[in-house]
Length: 446
Image (cartoon, rainbow, N blue to C red; front, side):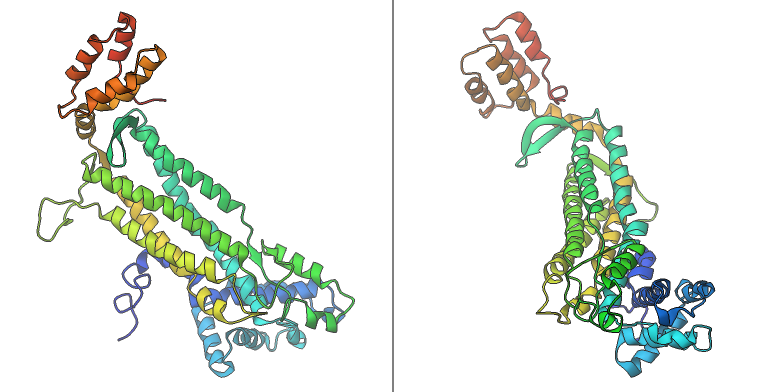
């Protein structure tokens, strides 16, 4: 079979490709190659600006033409690099040879041995990958989480005064308000996005085993540590100071764990909304021609929340593996980080699919006020907490036990049951009036 969205093994590149194609420039093989070229070019320019004697002849006017190699990078360019790789059997060396090939005959040809000068491939990879991830997060991924955050804020405001029966352990509990329950998720998401923003994007840049060995032996009087710091900072990242051949990935692991926490919160939200739909608190807007069940014509299933939950689960499984595996490497380097890093876009893609489904589901919700009110009316026993607390304030003897005896009988607790109980209390009329004002619709707290 020829590879297509229909024949792809991964649903990310198959069924869901159209939903995640905006992530391809960052996480695809093309994207990785593109960012490698960018790092190699910017490194060469940084060496020229460092004013090494052997690079004094490079005309600064050539810098725009150099940057054009990655700014105008095409799929044909990427395919050429893959063709070179068939000979080199080394992906980063193929990038170096591609750049030299493209610049042959240009004014910088005499200086081409300073392309990839003193570097190991991981100086390129461990700078290109975090940079591509950072760009993807800033441009596409974090804005999707912010859309969910903003939509939940809007719904919380819209439904802030809607009383709703709470359920603890699945049982009727002291009433709450629907808007407040959504604000629980608003606050949680906001705090995690804030924590995420504090995690730096770290890069490794220090030669074969992290010590600038080659740089120092060629130019022993240069401050290569300062050079590395400034170069990485110019790309919007921070340089890890003490590394092996590879980045230790602790900051990347922290980022992945932050997204895992965000996704866990959204799984919690998916399950709560799914449950509210099953309780008929929400109806879902119908779409013309859409089928809920192949057998039962009446059904409108909460598929958006189910799709979201499933994809968030897959994403979190991969986030957990990546964050647990990447910081571990045998001695100065083994290759396990390289192969798993190629999948870094997969959990973000599943997260992206999930966020789109969740947003779609939230936008289809229609409040069924009658169902919420019927549930409250059917559960007058939940005002017992409020009544016994007021009675405690008044010094009434054993109020908890009195309400327990009332509400744990087999009889149905109704408004009349509560009213009769209040009427028989040995308290003042003012307190009785206060107690009568406590209803499942008003006992919703702050």
